[in-house]
Image (cartoon, rainbow, N blue to C red; front, side, top):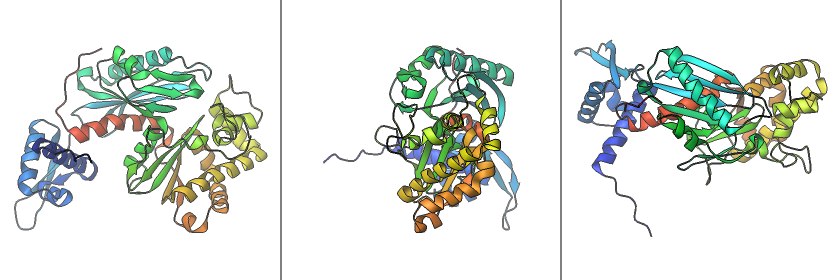
Length: 395
């Protein structure tokens, strides 16, 4: 039997410092006195750690509040100008790069179009690297003030030194995006599945806040999900949990882009909906075309509501979430007018007890949530380590 790893004093201090910083970020501004109650740490520990964080300029004073009979208490908060983070959304039809401060206020953005049939990895990498340069220039931010770059991509992200991406719909089979990015920039790079980055954004800043058991579904050209259990994102043994779009809803059904048949994505993904409506997708503006279909094709609308409700019912029966959030650009378009019907279809296909415990709502952060969530990959690392900003050589 393996012995548990011993935690050193340094590990404990790092963990306490990260907990304090997370508390200030999500629950601040707060006084030192309030922080002792929120974190359970002693007043002496809080005093020492906040002093160090103030000295590093990671946190700043944010005014004062009256105390009961004593001197006013100083409020503390994370310094939003301490550094910046970059989020990237690699999607079917675009590469979007956004620059944020630590309050996740957007400072600059740039979009590059992609043809749905052309996702050459070298082209995508060049777009990301060019976008980093553009948002830094437009935002007036030097590279040495950037904490890192987060990237949301389709498919399965195999963690490791090279960060291999398996995205069959893009023709990517183990492409080393991590290695390619390291060759082009000295900034730290963090990569995850786009549905998971969108899910993290909604959990931290959107409609998922406060939910311990939730599923955040992304419906765009592809379909995926983030599953949260006891407040923790489920990743699975190989980081591929959440491939909801490739669960089967029909035996020998419609051909899916993954190569299989009967996948949910082939019925409720934007390309699948357009194909069922007889719209050629190779040269079409998918968002405009989907809008026209949702306005004028009752049969496709009825089918889409039924298929989506069936897919959500499977999540309800299997996972018993308290909340399901529908996001992604296509999901938000579909849900905007059809949410009552989607809820009814889910209820008709699920068990009554878990269905009664589940609310089905739309995400709050809009179609840009993937890039925002990708930026939180960097922010999460910063909050966990709370190390002073390391200077990076400009690429």
